[in-house]
Amino acid sequence: MNAIAASMAGIVIRVNVQVGDAVQPGQDVVVLESMKMEIPVQAEAAGTVRAVNVKEGDFVNEGDVLVELEG
Image 1 (cartoon, rainbow, N blue to C red):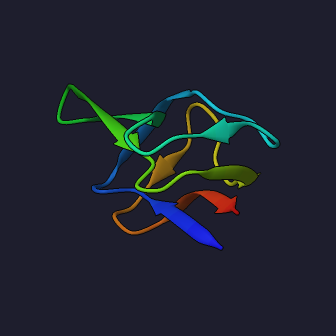
Image 2 (image 1 turned 90 degrees about the horizontal axis):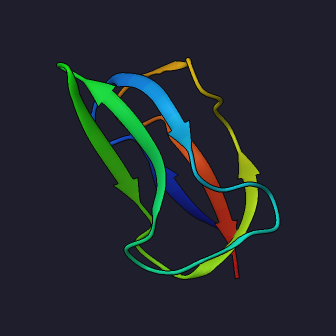
Image 3 (image 1 turned 135 degrees about the vertical axis):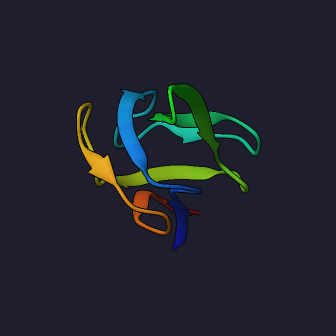
């Protein structure tokens, strides 16, 4: 499993993937709002989305796993 974690604390303003989607390295999977800025969180490896652990409006802390990939 490959986990995509939040790089900083913030509010999830957009989830760009859903379970079963294929992602590529560098693809934005979630966008956070922190300190009034949009912070994209990108996949570091290719894979298929196994789980999305957040939804829009959720508050996350740095290091929280947002999306899990397999493959």
